[in-house]
Every structure is written in C-alpha cells, then in structure tokens.
Length: 247
Length: 214
Image (cartoon, rainbow over all chains, first blue to last red; front, side, top):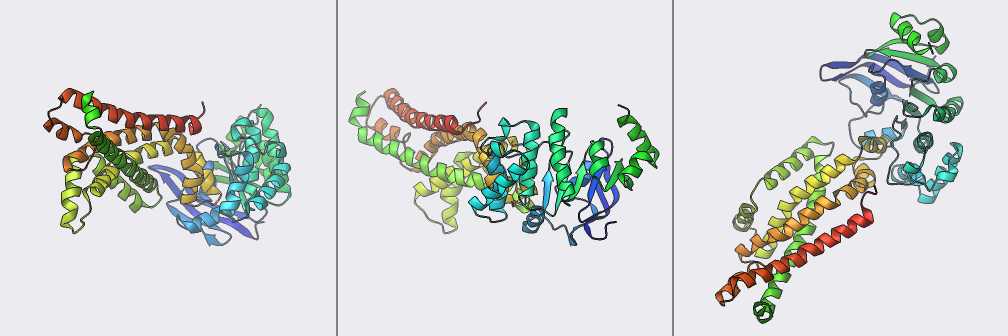
C-alpha cells in the first residue's frame, strides 16, 4: 500500500499550552487513497486534519505534501493550500456571496480563471452535487446538507490533489447526512485522495482504504477497515467501538 | 438673530472651514484606520506591533497635545506646511486609531471559519481580508464609524485654537464686536448640528443600504 505517498507526517507534535494534542504522529497517505480518521472527541483528529494545510501550526516534526514540505505563512503557503481542498464541519460558505459566487471566487482570485470560465465550471460542479437550481441563492437560504454540498463543490473547483474533510456531517440533521456522504462516496470511487475525519462508521467501512483510530493525541491503530471493525487490537479501540456500535 | 444675519460671511467662513477639516480628516482617518486595522490582524508580527503601537499612542494622547506635537514639532524637523494641513494630519491620525478599533471589532464579528475557508482555498491574506472578511465586517461597523466621524467633526474645534479658520473660532471675532455671547454660541451650535446631523443621516442611509439584515 501507499507506494506513491502524497501526504507524509513525520514525528508531528503539537501542544495547546501544556496539552499535548498531537503526539509523535506518523501518517502516510498515498495518492488515490481514502483514509478515514476516527476516535473519541478531543483525541486530536480534527487538529490532525487541520495541520495538513497548516490551519494549525505544529511545534515539531515535518509534514510534506507531494514531496514538498509545508511552507511558512505567505504566498507559498497560499499556493499549496489551493492544492488541498478542505470541507469544514460548519460549512463556512461565504455568507455575503451567492452559491455560484462562493464556488467561483477562488477560481478567479487564485487560479486566475476568467469569470465566465469559472462560472461555467462552478455550474458543472453544482450540477454534480445536485444543486444547479440553487446557484443564485445565498447560503442562508439552503439547508445544512445543501450548504455542505456547495462547500464540497467550492473545494473541488480548485482541482485539488487531495481533499480534507473535517467532520463534514457532524452538524447535519440525520436525513441530510446521506446526501453529503453520497457525494463523498462518488469522489472516493473516482480516485480522489481523501482524508476524512468522521463519526460515520458506515462511510468508513464502505469507502475507506484505511482507518486511522486516534485517542489522546496518538494514532492507536492504522489498518484496513474490515480488520479494524472486526478485530480491533487495542483496548481503547475495542472500548470505543463497543460504545458506538451498540445502537 | 441679528448676530447671524449681520455676520453671515464670518459664520459662513467658519462653517466651511469646519466642513473642510472634517471631510479631509475623515478621509485620512478612514484610510489610515483601514490600513492599521489590516496591520493589527496581519499574520506578520511586526505589522501587528506597528498597528498596536499606533493605536495605543494616538488613542491615549489628548488631542490638544497631539496638535501641539504636530504644529510645533514637525516644523522642527524641517516639515513646514500650512496650519490647516497640520490640523488635518493631527485630526486624521487621532481619529484613525478609533476607526481602526471599530473596524477591528467588526472584523472580529465575522466568524473565524470564513477566514479559514478563504485561506484553505489558497487565497492570500489580503484577498481573504478584502474579498471575504471586510465586506462582512463593513456592515456591522457602520454605526461606530459614524460616531467616530461625528466626534471628529466636533474635535475639529481644537484647530481654532491654532489659528485655523473653523466654526467655533468665530466667537472671538463676534465677541470683540460686542454681540451677545449667548446668541453667538447658539448659532455656532446650530452650525455644528447641521454638520453632525448630516453625517448621522449619511450613516443612517449607509446602514439601511448595507447594514446587517436581522
């Protein structure tokens, strides 16, 4: 597995004051791989996801993306972030812009596309996530699931090498979770490299190449989903699975 | 009533002087306040320090002292400009510190996720600020910026003490001519009201047009 590493984290450590939130993290994500990160709240999984595009800085260790170490804050970092799509728990659509403008903005400002070219691409992507009819609406007029699908289209519009999903369905009503997961499933099938922090075990089972289980700032297990769900090795994972799979 | 009709040109000159000071100093204050607010939220530490020092020094200095510093201090360094320009500089810089803080509080009302989303798309700091943060912050800072501009209009009276023609200063001329001090000041007050109410109306309009819909 992972013959062609796209993301590599080596000996990554991060502290919030005294709290050691990421402890000696080693993680490699290969091109085309879908890695699902699960774990209890406060285990550092969101933080891990956010360090990959340097929304969180790290104190020690190294993170490389396609062989390039993450640059310091500045133009270089902005350039790299354009290659890394990110989808947030709280959607974070630009509240003052329409759906179409949300998807087109960075294409024009960052990729330097012409406005009509960007809008054309945006409409294609909106069609893909099933929201072409809502292009002229503002985010506040959409449901959570719709907003999150727009957010995915917005990230895809940059033609990223990898997509990061930071608990993309955690703020959604149960009936809206599926529409978002379906979009993610189809991305996974098309070979997009994805790192997904989630509590959706069904998605982990069906779409992931690997499941990374985190607890207390450490990666406890890093295995194929079937292995992990059927035979968790660590007590911490057994305990976690017994709690969430009971219902 | 006579004091106004008989000295209309004196009042007029003073009124226009105050308007002029207010307009130019407002433009300077808005531009500088905008720049300083950007500095204060910049990812570069030295910019943040500069912005913080600017605000701390100017906001905590009495305006009169600042006038003295600019009008008497700058010429010592070889910078000799008309007093009116000095007055605009002093007023503009002073008010910019308050505008900066009003803008910054507006920036803080924009949820953090908006900036994170913009940055995660590869937008630079200045693009994030100009395309995403400020357009949203702008809506919530209209009222406090309006207050600061009104304060500026009234603060411009200090320039009169440094022989710049402005509205309040007209009382000296009129007093010497023997007019009733009360009526002199009533008409001066009316002059200020015309200016400040105009600013209020302008900002009310802006708020109606652009303010946050609730």
